[in-house]
Image (cartoon, rainbow, N blue to C red; front, side, top):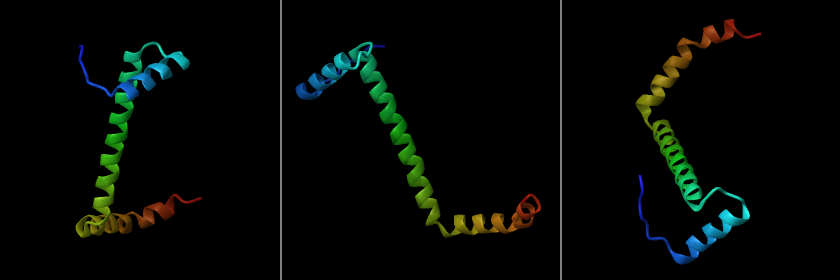
Length: 80
């Protein structure tokens, strides 16, 4: 699939220079890799924020404590 984007001239020039000096296959490959990396970072941020929010949720934390207590003896049984 092809797409067209409007990119600031200085950003585009920096990207072209980076591709040339780092022997990257093409500008398209660089842009695709950059988008993939940004999407991965945004997904990780979303997970991190969900975990932080869960840590502030009293019901969730009560469940975590209950599970920890339920498995406390099982953990001791497997300890060296």
